[in-house]
Amino acid sequence: MTIRDDHALAADLATEAGNRLLALREREGFEHPPSLRKEGDQQAHVFLMEALARLRPSDSVLSEEATREERLDPRRQTADRVWIVDPLDGTREYSEEGRSDWAVHVALWERGVLTAGAVALPAQGRTLTTGEPPKLPVFDGGRFRIAVSRTRPPEFVQKLAYLAGADLVPIGSAGAKISAVLTGEVEAYVHAGGQFEWDSAAPVAVAQAAGAFCSRIDGSELTYNQVDPSLPDILVSLPELAPTLLAGIRDLHR
Image (cartoon, rainbow, N blue to C red; front, side):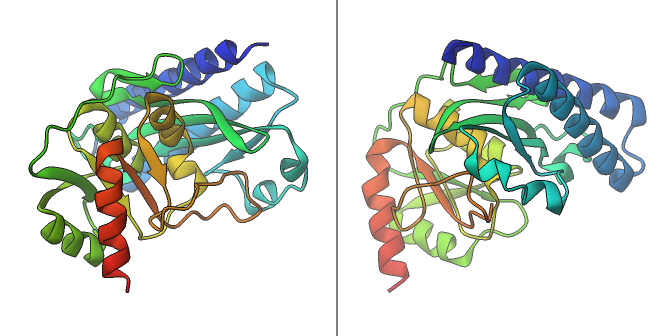
């Protein structure tokens, strides 16, 4: 088993789960969004859990759709390898016809760091992976764009955008937002409204492999596979914008 195998596995699993979600969406339609969201979450979760149990039987798994007891399994805290997955990131967007800003996340944590990961964007027809990380855009100065939540952009981010001369771009799932930084649709993503490890592990793994800046909004390190999987805030940006954003956030929190 090599690291390259893990990159490929993450990409293959995220892509296949995404294809299954697309097929379900096509088959069920959009007349009953809650049912579509629930079924999509469950089907993708079962597929990923069964695949990882078969292909990586010695590894632990932390999934958004796991039960509370499964999340608190003490074996996860002593494991050397833990897969952190979000079977369907952006359930609201998934259940809305025409939206493509939802994702599937598959990441591997090993001994304190993220070592492999993939973010499938099924409705966009692409998967971003640590095996072949995207080439970061180059910021050429001037106004830049910050991805924010469609429904609950933090008030301080609106103030930050005003002070920094940036525009806010509403995007659905966290995976779609971080992917947008890597593909040049925005230059940064700032969030402080509450998240969990599975919301960001895979996109952060890909962002780090691509050379993007990733941290908590106070500049501290993002850490994964904690007993409490909450990870309430995050900053991902092109490297050259990080000092400006961190300084602005510090000023606003004084």
